Image (cartoon, helix red, strand yellow):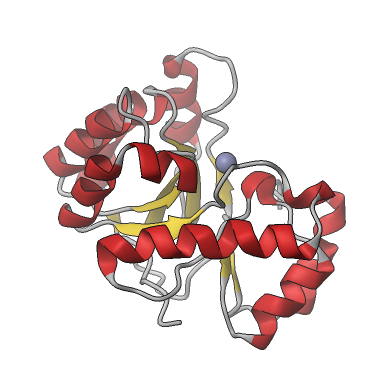
Length: 212
Ligand SMILES: [Zn+2]
């Protein structure tokens, strides 16, 4: 697994249901986009997904939700899932549990304004989660969402390199694909790749929303 930093061996302690890295619905792939909403990028990405009739999941940053609520409204109206990517996007690595929970619940409260769900699936910033927060989530049966396929779209390489890489090694059934919507790279690559992938019979869906 290329996503797993050393400290994250803890994640293995939780049942698969609570730490999602792939899904059991083998017919589908799941595109996910972190770090938005961004007025310069997210609308273009939404246009791309709409053009190809593909649904996806957006793990949003609380302070950006406050700044750009109209973009979040559109994400939900377009049929995508919204998830929690913390309030400030600072790593949880050097934060005490109280502060971590503040980051989580503040963002839950913001997301709730858009889709009425009390809690949202959580992807911690930089993928880091400590033992105390894991235990807190486990007690409440709240799920964390990681990824099984890292697109590496954040690397400083031209979009053509990203397209080549994804084309040569496409997501497999059940994969949760990590991408970002704080640049146009994902939208530019997907505009080329989605028609190819869809014509090959691949299907893409939003992750199911959290029931708690
Ligand atoms: Zn992030």
